[in-house]
Image 1 (cartoon, helix red, strand yellow):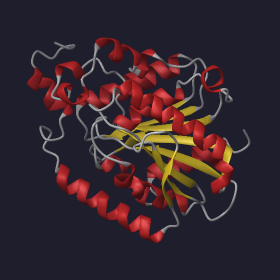
Image 2 (cartoon, helix red, strand yellow):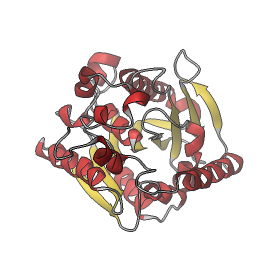
Image 3 (cartoon, one colour):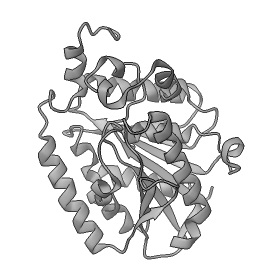
Image 4 (spheres, helix red, strand yellow):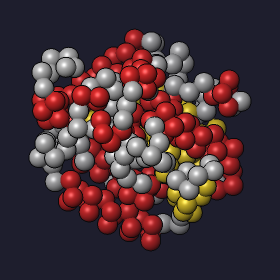
Length: 288
């Protein structure tokens, strides 16, 4: 069994929101209602295709001013749940600060593998870079954020070899913010998730960001709810330590009083610690 855990039940108690006693349905309803409101209140272009399959599309929430920085958001859901429409709410606080927000939709496990999910998110970034000016965004000011599985995908996208794989500048992602991310996939073959995501060990090794930290990358904010389980703390702390050990710029943003689901409610408020940290990150790289 993984690390010091002796049973699947012990691991599930760390990674299952049901076992953690969280009101999953209540949080899903809250974000669903707020996402619907944001789509009604803000100008948006929905279901913009970036790839050949129906799942590969984007929702774009353009800032009022042209040539705006772009925050790309990757939703969570343990790679087998969710869609971009569940996360429209993340645009609220940032669009009002003149940041264009793009939410990626991607295919889910077990219909596709995590390898394919990573590929789709990388392809989405390439599409955004090449088409940014068509929706008023600045292709040279792309930032990235994601929650839970989206935090994992944020780290994987930041480790992309853009020049050799896509013919794009290697600094295409100026900075990132990974929220409650999953950077070490080693535990998951032993958990309740296995039938959902069907991980092979080679997939675990290919897709654990802690084993694929790039030589060069933009700055990275690592954050999670202080009330999250000890494994979520470990995942983020160990990744941030490894990131900084490579000489990369990284910082920890504490979110006291937050759990796995409320760690992202700061996107609703421009003045929240989460939005404030992301906007500061964007302003610090404005000249790059």
